[in-house]
Image (cartoon, rainbow over all chains, first blue to last red):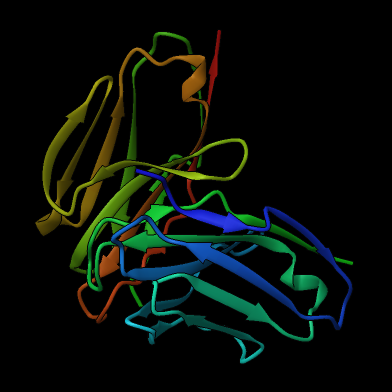
Length: 113
Length: 111
């Protein structure tokens, strides 16, 4: 069974631009979560989607948004990029909503210059 | 929110040695997972262990939920075990799923 896939793997953007990252969950998994990893803040929860609805949201500004499609694929968008948004963005999928085991993708490394 | 503390922050071993990594959490949890982050950044699942004991080869884990801690044991360590180990929990006060990660233990295994 294929794992969680994320595209693109690497991205370089300029301050003020916006970016969209994509995540395809494991086949049959319906819940997708997003996390940001930085050297200073560690791994932090961004949001969780299930059945095309945001179920949980972390403590991030409104510039960070996401959505989930009917096939469970998810995208996250960051608008008006700041230097501090440079990070590894990780997507995780689980079978359904709730405290089930989460499986992570390889991540998208975003650099903002 | 729930707090997660991992110890030690850094650990250096010689190949063949055994080690124990600890994860303390501040509240009841629905989910606890151990991960190994590879050099490319991907989190590799080691254990899903909200309670009890599990073993997988040279690795084993124990979670004592009533005392709010989990231990990851690595026996006969190999250089390929090097990397960062994370403990992550999902607190019972949250609906849905929302992992809170510890700061990790950086393990270096020297040949």
